[in-house]
Amino acid sequence: MQYNGENNYYDPAPVPAPSPGGQNNKGGVFALGLLTGVIVMTLVGSIAYVGTKIYRLAEDKAASAQADEAAADSLINDTTIEKLNMLEEIVDDYYYRDEDIDTDAMIEGMYAGVIDSLGDPYSVYYTAEEWQALIADTQGIYDGIGAMVSLDVTIGLPKISGVIAGTPAEEAGLRENDIIYMVDGEITRGYELTEVTAMIKGEAGTTVHLTIYRQGEDDYLEMDVVRRKIESPTVNYEMYDNDIGYIQITEFDEVTADQFTEALAVVKGSGAKGLILDLRGNPGGSLPIVVDIAREILPEGLIVYTEDKYGQKEEYSCDGKHELDIPLVILINGNSASASEILAGAVKDYGKGTLIGTTTFGKGIVQRVLPLTDGTALKLTISSYYTPNGNNIHGIGIEPDIECEFDSDAYYNEGVDNQLERAIEEIERKIQ
Image 1 (cartoon, one colour):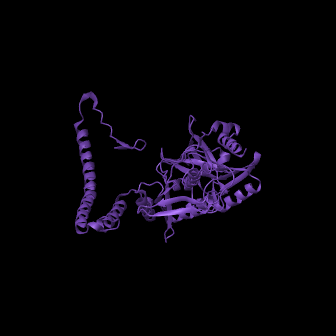
Image 2 (tube, one colour):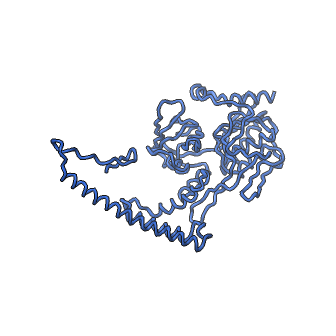
Image 3 (cartoon, helix red, strand yellow):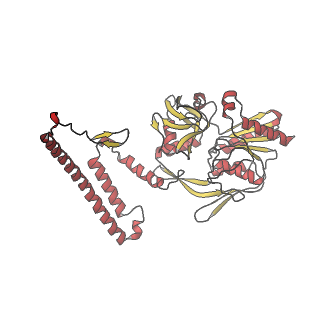
């Protein structure tokens, strides 16, 4: 039998051609039949050997369940331990390449599989290396290309959710909403988001090859991007004409609250009569950090509250002492998620500003990172969050007050950001 790796099926061996003159070669057929019989018996013998062990395991499981039904409901019991031992033994006996067998990798895969079984894309098991890389990311300095990556849940592939200015990603021509189909020739479907970002990151000076699908293009785009050290401020700001301040928040990390406070002080000190807060492409981040930033904007009252599976609520409030006293516009889009939606949702509920752009991502759940003593960590979804008016936006998103689709042709061909232009118009209308 021949294995067709491309199509993943078995092709039958070719049927022997009849002998010259149209007569059957009985000797050849008999020999072929005998050989086939030996092969089949060998295969059946192997299957019977493995099958016997599985059958005995099933019997033991039934006995264990009868003996202690409560224990059988736990991950760790005599049956699961026995089955793990048996799986290890079968792999050791039959797997064709000993060099592929890595016990440590199996163990890590087992832990990750427990969390993967929840079916929640936001709950993740981190190895010690992945956890350290995540910590480095939140500090805003890492070796990479300078692009934010999120999961496009509609197709199950990672995508570019934002590009940091002045980075290799921008220089290579990557754009928001580009689908990352392959990284260094490896198809990304089926990989966790943390695994894809780890594939993209790497030592400064090295190159990563990305295969990109971009809507409107006839074929995939192939891009070689040279990694370098990225020192990414999460807050950018500037002043526009007519005394309009602009602040962009790319994500909510440990450093973001202080950076925002500084940016807000600068634009207000420069005489800003109105503020544009840009949350487009912001995938979220820390709940406490976005709450701190909301306290620089909102009036006294509730900012957000969470509720866990036990019905226990945790409220985050604002004393109103630093309420923003100038007109506010917030820019949002389909890649504004999680913490971005907490801030946008609170502003909308209080009528504190005008939301312009397109409907946000719709992530209304909260994760907590739980470091373990062996250096690994677990990120687990623990609750849902609700806006001040009691809205849970999970799977729904937040609709803008003014719908404004992004004109990518104008932006990439002419350098015109039509959503930002619309925000400036709205601020000018408010301050007249």
